[in-house]
Length: 361
Image (cartoon, rainbow, N blue to C red; front, side, top):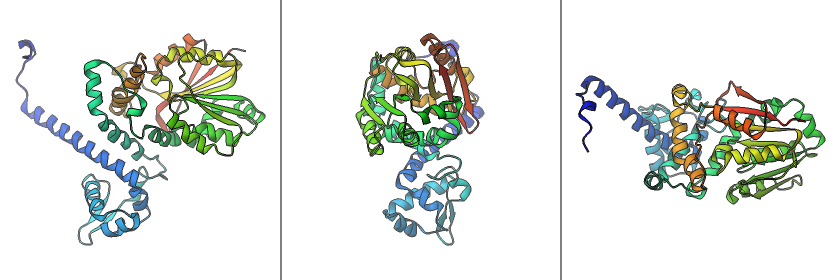
């Protein structure tokens, strides 16, 4: 179909050529991202961080991997500006400054974890194309390794600061946990945050609900030997357990639900008087124009289009999406009965926002 005449114009070829370079750079970076994911999964980044300059054969031998594949991977890392290559000695080295955001011990956080999403998203492209035509959604099991990736993300965004920064957002909570209270993690995924709290606070009782059995299997394994934590497969649609908990959490889980407002209503009802609901979610705005400078905005909208929106629609939900926005979250929390949802951000974590919601005594 031809465009209306008034929208057709002759391009400025200088600007067009510059934009073509931009698109080429995007495609090149996408390829590198997939290989960063492979470097993470194989442990090659962790290995290189601890090795002096080495040949591809030395690296492959230490990693117990096939040299021919390692050599091709290294070529991507060199041309992508991640690994340094000495052509005279044919050695490769990962600079400490680069390892600082690419290893499991990275002091700046392991960004390679998020590269895995690019590979995962590509694997569902054909199904997503069908969704574009039908408007239908997908299921969690359509996404390979999703829960493992989210568990690694949780290690950095939740577990790393859970006891020193996150739980202290609620005054007096640590003392109450030490004394013994009832805790629920709604949409707990693999449940690692719940397990860590159960270990730290043996007098409290912890429950984790999630839709996916494969995620909970990881939590049950991690909780072996603990008698104060339990996990249950639960569709949280219509959640209703009146006044059963003193403290409820949701870590990056609300916007994926079939009925987010209904769940928030149920969570308010499930808290005992004076109880607290602690929510983590993406801290972007509900308005696109406010997110132009938000960190990883394009990545987050991609996650929304290819995962969060489809899994909500696949349950018959409204498809809020990853970037539902703090404005929407505040409004929905207020509608559920939380009169004051205090919003917090951490300087080291620009992507997420935390809401502390108290139920009136």
